[in-house]
Amino acid sequence: MFSCLRDFIVENPEIAEFMMTSFFGLSVFVFSGLAYYHKKESFRLGLLDKRLPIYRSISKAKDIILSEIAVTRPLNGDVEINQNCAPKRKEALEEALGELTKIDFYELKVLFGEQTKQKFLSILGHIHGLKAEKTSDTHKNEQLELLLAELNDVHDIFLPYMDFSKYKKNKK
Image (cartoon, rainbow, N blue to C red; front, side):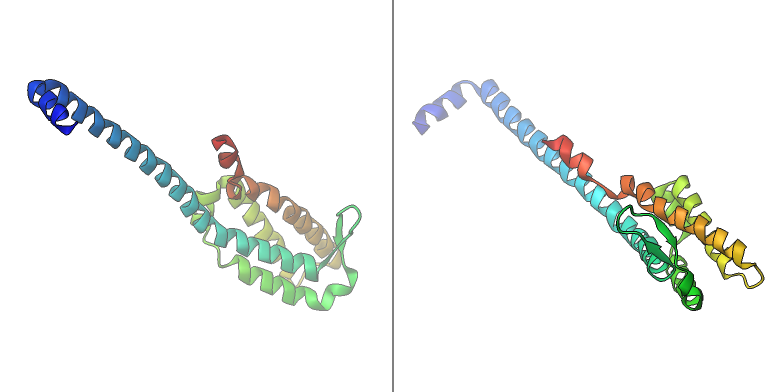
C-alpha cells in the first residue's frame, strides 16, 4: 500500500506538493480559528477581572448603606429611610465612603463608560452632602432619599458590563 503511494508521489510531484500545501493551509486555518476563539474569551475574562473589584466596591457600599440606613419592604421592594438609624448613619456613611474611595475614576470611566462615572460621582456627592454637619435634617432626608434612588439604579447600570450571558447564547 505504501509503495503505491510512494510511486504516486514520485510520478506526480506537483499533486503531492499541492496536497501537502493544502493540508498545511487547513491546519493553519484550524489553529488560527481556535487561537482567535481563545483570545476573544480571554479578553472578556480579562475585562471581567478588571471590572469586578470596582463593582464589588460599589456593591459593598450599597449594601452598607441599605443595611444600616434604609429599610427594604419585603413585599414590594420599596426602600425607605430607617428613622432609628441616626446614631449609626455617620459610621455607615464613613464605611461606604471608604469603599468608594478605593475606586479610580479613570478606570471607572474606561471600563464602564461615562454614564457610570457620572452615577458614581452623583452617589459620592450625595454621601458628602449627608456627611455635612451644617445641613438641616430635612435636607439630609432629601439627600438620603436621592442617594437611595441612585443606589437602586446601580445594578441596572452595571449589568450590561458584568453580564456575558448574551455572548454565550449566541454560541449555541
